[in-house]
Image (cartoon, rainbow, N blue to C red; front, side, top):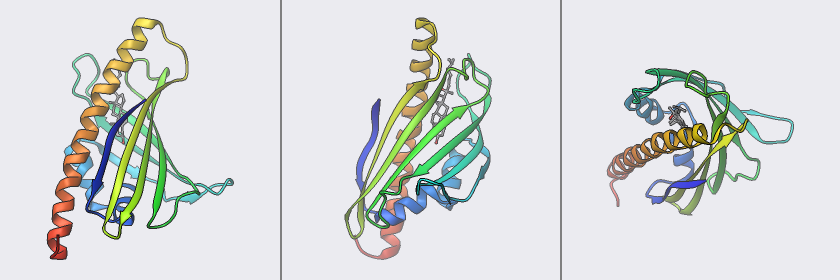
Length: 177
Ligand code: YK8
């Protein structure tokens, strides 16, 4: 896997969790920018093991002439019970794209880790891996991997930029640095 984001933001850990993992204006706006449409979220719900889960369905827009322009996607998120309100949040997200070539071969695993570094600061770390459900032919595998990494890299680069803007807004509104 790879680490796409590993950065301290001048945003509290609980605020960061709210921005990324609730039906926030921030995430709605970010989805708009990424042309992710028809988004629906289930509420967070505790499962039998004590973790909390929810799932998202949306349509992604793809900038790749080899693939169709749109694909439906499902993202299953798990907030682990080891998470501590305001201190530490660990979320795993499995993203399945339904309408791209070879979609039945792979999915993407994103791990988001938010850790409090001070009252108004947190570190956000995102680790990503492309997982295979079936072993494709070598050439197909490298094709999937290459196309996935570029799309994922682009997504998290933009997420970082949008978070930096949000950070500036939050801290300006708070009237302190
Ligand atoms: C989530 C990983 C792969 C997929 C895509 C597939 C190409 C298939 C290659 C063929 C289109 C929001 C991506 C980037 C779509 C977007 C997914 C997003 C960014 C030719 C073999 C959607 C995070 C996320 C995870 C995985 C991304 C897909 O929150 O290349």
